[in-house]
Image 1: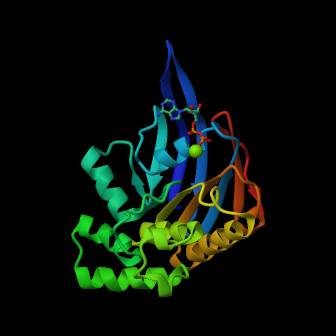
Image 2: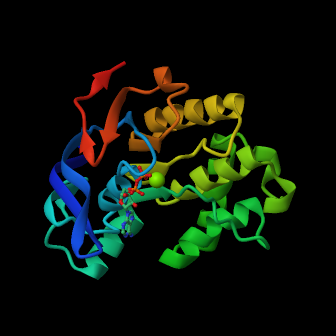
Length: 226
Ligand code: ADP
Ligand code: MG
């Protein structure tokens, strides 16, 4: 199992009390499968991803990523785990306006000290894998919203992650482009054997994924196999 959450509870300060964003959440995601987490706004979906990404430590429960129990890890160890094993696609692409598509990906290995030639070859391969082979030299303003989201996804794969976490990738796209992005995520999940968790409030196109779970007020319902 690439990702295992058990008994995960997360609270935030809220006035005099605490707000429970995640309430004893359990989730297993095997390699090569895509689990969609659906639920209304404010139900805890992004909190779930933040915890799985080791960006936020839960109040209680365990987060195991690629065989590593993250509970006792320090800051630097978590950062290393993220750098080596986790790909994160945030809701906003946050592409750098002055960089070309291929450079947006290469930046990832500059940050982790990889070799430039290898990084460029890998970046071009990944742009090809997300259907942007001809767009490597374009800057964000020369690309559509769907193309920017594909770059965002390709960038998250630069470190060949075991765990791929994706937050609302289709929220800014129309119906057809949303379907294409989901198809892409399913095929990347298979090809690269990632354990993929996709968060969305949009129930369209979920027939494509392996499993859908529903988040409601911080609680995860029993999985529905599709
Ligand atoms: P979703 O992604 O499903 O919209 P979130 O995980 O963002 O839900 O939020 C779950 C709950 O936690 C909401 O009530 C939200 O207001 C609250 N929340 C999220 N992040 C914070 C934070 N950093 N501080 C305080 N409350 C937060
Ligand atoms: Mg959210």
